[in-house]
Image (cartoon, rainbow, N blue to C red; front, side, top):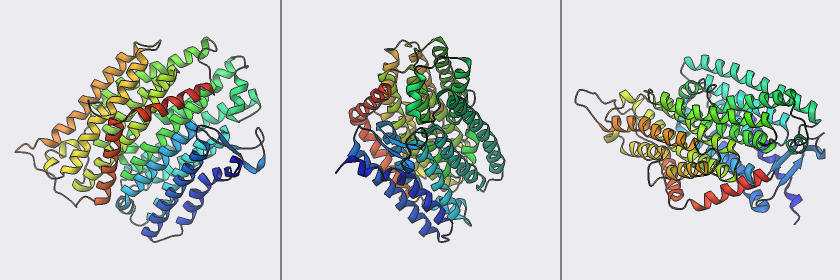
Length: 493
C-alpha cells in the first residue's frame, strides 16, 4: 500500500487529544475522566509508533485542506520529530499514571478540569512538534502556555496565583517577540513554512533586519528554555505547582522548546554564513556556560527538593545547548543523548520527590532528616536518580556527560569541556546534600510523621524508570547510534 495513504493519521496526533480534552470538561466522574485521558495518550502513542514503523528515517508530510505551502499549513514528521513525539507521549503517559491520586488531591472539586488542562498542555506540545509552519507553531505554543498558566493557578497554594500571573506576563512578552520575528522573516522570505524558509535564507543577505528577526524568534524560544540570565523566573512556579504539573512541564514542555530551537535555529542557520551569525552562536556558548555554573551554584543553596531539581535542570540545559550550538554531528548527537537520558532521570527524581511529599507532607530538606528508614524505596529511588543525574560511575548519566565532554573536547571549542567538568563536580555536591541529610538521623531531630502509605502504582512507575535507566547504562550504543543518526539528518537538512 502506498505510503501516502497513511498521511491522514498525522493530524489525528493533535486532533484526538484536543477533542477528548474538550469532552472531559463535561465528564464529572474522576475515574472516567482519568481513564479516557490515559486511553487517549496510549492511542496517540500507537499512531506515532505506526507511522514511525512505516516511515523509518524518511519524511512524511500532510497539507491541511490539500493547500500546499506557502498558502497552506504543513504537518511534517521526520526522525527528529519522531524522537521528541515519543519522549512527550511516554512522559505524558507515565506522569498521568503516576499521578492518578495526585490529580484528584491537587484539585479535589475540579478534577475533570485538571485532567482536561493536562491534555490541552499535551496537545499544544504535540502540535508544536509536528507543525512545519512558524505561525501554526505559535498557535500551539499559546494553547500549551494557557493550559500551563491555568494549571498553576489551580494549585491549593495561594502564592501560586501570583506566580501564574507572572508566568502569564512573561509568556505574553516572549510570544510577542516570537510573532514579531516571524513577521519580519515572512516579509523577507514570503513564506512561513520552515522548509521553504530554510532554503531561501541561504541566499538572503545578512542585514540588520534579518539579525533582528532571528534575535526576536530566538528570544521567544530561549526564555521558555530558561537559559541564563532569563531562566530565574522558572523554578518558583515549578515548585508551587502540583507535583503532576511540575513533572509534566519539566519532562514535556522544556523538551519541546529545545526541539524548536533545533528545528528553527540550528536547522535553518549556517554558523559559517558570516561573522554576524558566527558571533550570534558564540553568544549562546557563553550564556550556556554561565547557565551551567550559575544555576549549579544556586542549587547548592536550596532547601527545597523541587527547587533544587529545577535549578539543576536549568544547569543541564546549558550542557544541551553547548552541544547543539557547536553544530557538529558528534556534539549534537551527544546533546540528544543527554535529552533522552535526562528526561528519564528527571522524571524518576521528581516522582520520588513527589512520593516523599505525599508521605511526609514537605519537600524541605531540613525537615526530611533521617526519613530513609521510614520510606526506604522512595529514598533509594531518589538516591539512584540523583547519583545518575550527577554522572556517577555505572549510571546512564555518566555515559551522557562523558559522551558530550569527549565530543566537545574534539571540537574547535575544546576549552568548554572544562566548564562541563566543573558543572559535573557541582552537581555531585548539590545532590549529595539531601542524600546525606535524609540518611542521617540526629538524636535531637524529630522525624516528620508518615501521613499515608506510598501508592504501589507510583512505586511501580518509578521502578520502570529505574529499569530503563539500567538498560541504557548497560547498553548505551543503540541510543547513541539513533541520536547520531538524527544529528546527521538534521545537519543535512
